[in-house]
Image (cartoon, rainbow, N blue to C red):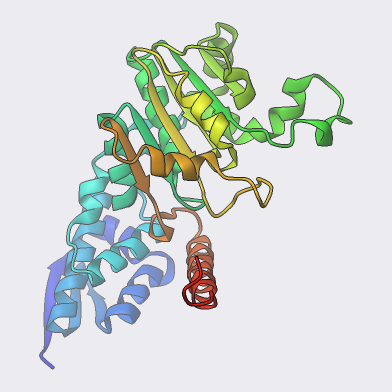
Length: 332
């Protein structure tokens, strides 16, 4: 084993961000790559096996560059950089960090944070219809919303239409006061929340009053033709095949569509097929339609959420394997 020591200069104002509170980020690097990182008056010393030292140096260089761009260093970014470093994928963070979609009302930049998210955003730019499929926390809806608002502000589309199936909007919610819109609003709340954060409540309400932004349950889409619009269908795993076909055939000229869903969280009856599953098979080979499959690696919520999603993915994979193994030989 060839051990080396490598030194790099890091300005003090960036070192505090890169090292993290109580050196938490550096401790992660030391643990995962079996190196020792020491700060000596603005000069950072990395000691360990040669290959690991080079990987840690690359990660620290990327984090420093992100700090120079005025960004805060988040734990998720450090964890992702470590994961990419182990796979010998260099400069990933600095590449995806440069793709700013828009800014929130507070001035915070919205951009992809993983390679999967970057591929998803690029697919939305290039294709008329994009399916974003993946677990909770991967930014499927939020990034699609940011892309829609950016297109709307740039006059690339005339309106934004956000929809999702409200599968409980029938008799089970019949006892609630108000009209149908009041009954299904809880299902649409995540869409409202994203709009408020990115666009601002005042701008959103003004455009909604003009009919330029519409948030509605999927049932309201029937019988319409949607031209010159940015249309997002959220929670698509809860559509039936007939609903999905109905929605996709509403698309008119000058429109762009993003369909998001998590196939592991279906609320349909056990014997019902998901419109998202069927669409994945039926439309896979059609030009100008892209399917982006995000995974637990693309989760950008609390690091614990990523571990939870990964644990469930592993569990479900084992269950499917055991179910196939238990089938009688020769039986179809």
